[in-house]
Length: 391
Image (tube, rainbow, N blue to C red):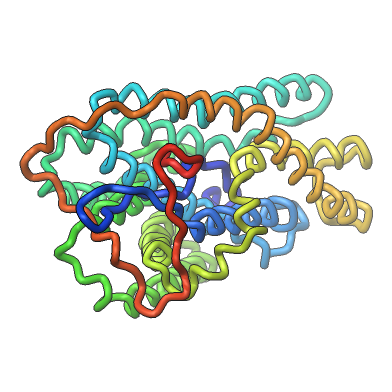
C-alpha cells in the first residue's frame, strides 16, 4: 500500500448543518442528520483500518481507511464552503470564522500532543499522533478558503475551484518525481486541493438554481460506485506494473465520488435513511477526539499488557486489539465532553454580526423545497440559535 493509504487521519469537520432558503425568502438552517451519520461511519472505518489493517500482520480487507479520509476532506470542504457562502456577508465574518475554527480544532489537538510527548518518555509513541497530518492540511485550507471567496468573482468561482482541483493531480505527479519522500503529497494543500475543493465546489453548485438536480439524480448515485471501481483498477495496475497511478489519480477520483455521495445525502436520497442511525450519529459526534486518541489507546494497551507494538500476529495481540476498541470509544467521548465541547461552546459564543448589503453578482440560493423525489428522509429544522448552528 502507498503512504497515502497507510496514514489515514483526523480531519475535522463542523457539525453537519447547512443554511437553506426558506419559502418567502428567509434563510433558515437545517441539520442534515445523514451527514452526521456519514461522519460516524467514516470514524469507524478509520479506526478499524488502523486496528486491523495497517499493521505488520494486518488484514488487507481492512485497508480502507484512505477512503474514509478522503470522504472526510470532501465533507469538510462542503460544510466550510456552505458556511462561507452563507456567512461571509456578516460584518464580523473573519473574526468569528477564525475564532470558531481555532476553538474547534486546536485545544483538543494540543492536549493530545502534550500527553503523547509525556508518554514518549517511556514508550516509542511518535506514531500515535500520525493522524494529525490531516489537521495540518485542514488548517491551510481554513486560512485560504475565505480569501478565495473574497478574491474570485462569484460568476468565476465554480471554474476556479474546478481548475484548482484538477491542478492538484499535476502537482502530485510533479512532486512524486522531484521529492524523496511522500509526506509532502499528504500535507501540502497544492497537492491535496482536489479532496477539499470538491466539497467546496459542491456547496457552490448546490446553491445554483439553474441546475435541475432532479434530472441528474440517477447519474449522481452511480458516480460513487464508478469512483470506487476506478480507484480499485488504479491500485491493481500499480501492483501489477509497478506504476504509481494510484497516488496521483486516486485522490481526485475518490473526491468526485465522495462529493456525489454527499450530494445524494443532502438531497435526501434513499441512501440517507441508513445514515441517520443514532449509533452512527453518536460516532460522528465524537469523531475528532476519537481520531486523536485511538492510536494512543492501542499503543498503550499493547505496551502495558504485552510489552510489544500493536500487531495481530498472536492470539493475545488480537484480544488486546479487540479490548482497545471500547476503550478508544470511551476516551474519544471523554475528550469530547471534557475538552472539545466546552471550548467549542465558547467559540460559538462569538455570534455572527449583521449582514452587509448584498453585492451584485451574489449567487442565488438553493430553494428550500428541493429534495430527492419521493424520499423518506425529511431533515429536521432548527433555529440558528440552536446547537445545530453551522460553526
